[in-house]
View 1 (cartoon, rainbow, N blue to C red):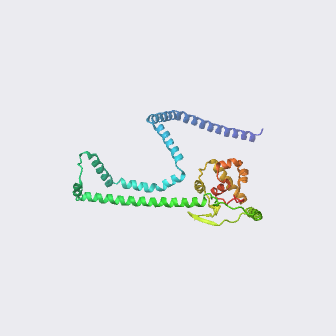
View 2 (view 1 turned 45 degrees about the vertical axis):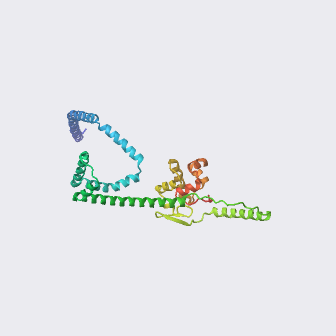
View 3 (view 1 turned 90 degrees about the vertical axis):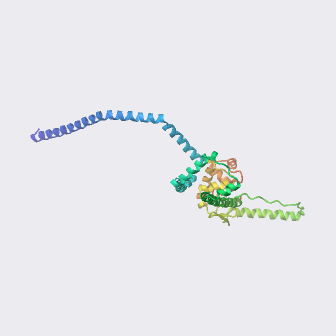
Length: 324
């Protein structure tokens, strides 16, 4: 081994010794830090445990569990739309609270409460006593305020009634448009036709059925029947444009049909819309059994009245081929 190689080895050993000393010093520092922090961590943990124990004794955890129960009932009883409407009304509610908490308003409320508490000491007034009381300026001001409040309340009640009437009118129009059509029956007793005439009538009806079947094989564009809330419906009660359909609108259409939608109903409706998006044709009852895996009996259980037509209406699709 040459002198140069020996010096190189010595230099590497010195470097490794330096690094080992550094690592040893870091490890020693880490151990010292952990030894110093361990009592602090134990004290902090004990303090946290004591705080949680105090909170439990004071009922914070019971309050939190009860609050979660209230939240669950809110979720079950209110829809996201209700919560959104409440959020939109929060500003108006806060403004009303700010008005009612003004010092002058609180002072008036306190005076009214005091008068109610002293009701036993107030003597009844007769007709002439009330007439004399109206000469008091404060009484006149209070009566004017009461009448103004009644006028504004009446105005608000009338606006609410008009809104409800408009909503009921829209629902009635929608029900009339989407409701099932009833067949008409001939009145009186029909006289029997001669054999030759009866044969011609039977042949004519057979030709009409063949023509209707041929017409049903290729669906024709439906004529527009009405526009309700900006949405166009065909004369037979189906949406003119399937793309404007939403789940909220589907729930409304189902309500008009007398249905309360469950998960099973939504499974059928989603499958019908998915099949329409693929085939560009509304699925009939046979096609629905294929795409949903349900039997015809199951579909009739979910949609008792003409399931093919009802599913198409609620799903916002055109009338299925086959003139159901």
